[in-house]
Length: 308
Image (tube, rainbow, N blue to C red):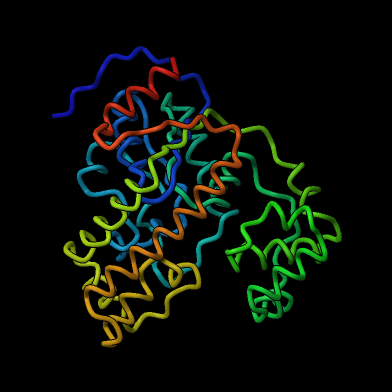
């Protein structure tokens, strides 16, 4: 039985956001915080944890965590269905509104940048994607796409993660279709929907946690999980799940198990680096520095104290 601490934290009506790079332990902190706060539930802001049949590779909340605290937007879509940041944000908003009507505190957690941004600051009014233009831009190399964005919007390019082909292409698409710089669209963001906290760990320690998680995923059955997806036409979103392509390469005999662990760890570290870059730009977030010996409960207690 879980014993809730009486921290006497006023909940008000605003949701709380627990964010951080992959492997930082934000999900565990969110569960502990929900228990500390009492009448609280968790809403996922992750683009991939929505999928059924993929709980291991998407690092979805465990059965034990979901037994302790109710989670929303986890494991409800088929891997053949596309997820979309705007649709996800609308679903989250509906759930959040119902929770608040019932006197529950919504705690959002996850690390998918655009999904988080749409939930925290409202859905962007930037022009929607154009299939023909997107296909043309996707065919560009990263270097070509970066050059075109820098020529079209130097200031916007400077604020873009230029190592992420998808982000560069989308921002270039917005500039082309909208006829205005990225700053115009970003100025339309609303104020944050509620207080937010970012779990911050030493880079070396985070890398070690990521490596351990890659090993644990395989021990927990990630390879078998991916094998069970064979025969399905995975959606564009599901097919981008971190580690999926590497496991598929392993299954084709192109990687050894040791190489597989290294490949997943490297890809995850690179993803975490991009997340940290984005999170540092979100000045509304309160950084919560966490040491290697600190438990998720202790971190949650620190956040609860800030919410008093």
